[in-house]
Length: 590
Image (cartoon, rainbow, N blue to C red; front, side, top):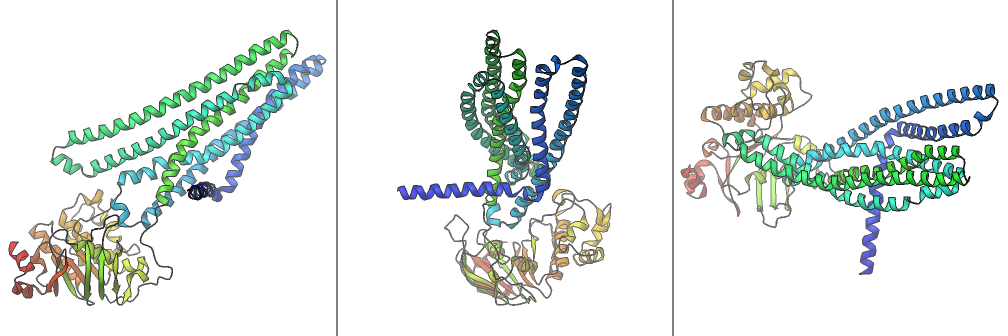
């Protein structure tokens, strides 16, 4: 038991060191600006320590010199102090401007890293996530982290220089008065640590609550047409108000401890000043110190208490930033479950022969098998349709071919090569998918079709639109191929969107096609046009069609009837009708 606890502690320490090692690594691309930022922070802090010493020298020494010499010395020292103020001003400007820019660039790199990581994760990850919460990791959390990256090191440098310098100077001025000033520090630190522990929990809760609000907002706005069609505005407002109120309650807790923190620090700072003035007055009366030393002491008290406040306030920023940083690391810690093998090769010269060898599949976290014992050979260039009741696993089966999900057992091969032995990129470049739920990006028609092959020329995009029977309706749009089509192509009809998605695949020109109920949501006229486009696209390509309307697959070379037990029937349309089995029952029901 003791050994297990020791091993756990060792792992936690290793994880803790790794977290901070990674944190520091983000400064590496900005070593020059980071060093300059710390240098000017150091310079600014040092100047605030030097100026009171010059004032003390004037009040203790210079004013007692011969008047002309004193005026000359005072003039020189005032000029020196003005010069120091100018240097301090530039130092603060540099820290505020270039330090913030360094933080912004680190934030940019963090955002690029997490977005890149999102792109590597499979459907399994996104199936369990809310888009709004994922967005919150990229926006709100990273802003707080960038503030920590910028302010953290410079605040520490400034505070340490001021605190150490003022501590040494105060002790050199008067030890007894310095001890009075330091007496309240231990209590102040204990109080601050207690407050900060409470604030850390509150800040983490705030992060989770704002992520929930983002998720609710994204969900509601994405489905705004459903909301309005069902007059659900009031329901959405109530759901949003509930999440909004939870956020307020979490903020209430954090502000409670922030209030205790800041008011307590203010009180402690004032008490230190009162203690120094009170004891200083007594020491002046018994001539233990000079009044000029008390003045110097009062000038340095702020230099002494201000860094203490800054250091303790920094812990608030640290808690805020680290809660976001930990959430950031949580995402990076999610390993992609579909990765290329170390010796993965490019899939080239694809003919399109697909083989399923005893394939089984179940979703992560679920033991129930969606597919089991699937054996299937699809010849190169063959047109195969999949039919069956909802939940039989048709879409899942097709999603295994481009490795959107990984098989739980068995293997899938293309042209005799196990798809797990080739690069995921080359595999997916060889497959074109047309889905029922078409996703078009906010932008114009040209950009959306070109997504199929980003390096395509305008002429190639237009040719793909011709092949997809889309050129005519595109030309009729207000700005033709430059027409903005709105979020998810909302300004287009279902048939138009589907033809753009087919044009996208024409441009990609893959040897393998998957049509996932691509016409099931279209009216008869749109279905006919889209069906013609699909048949033109399928010519001389290996094609798998998931069909909802059985009338659209009569000409398929082979039809597979999928049930919970696997492939129950297969054959041509007329062969399956003659069997009077599951397919015939489905066809007659329709």
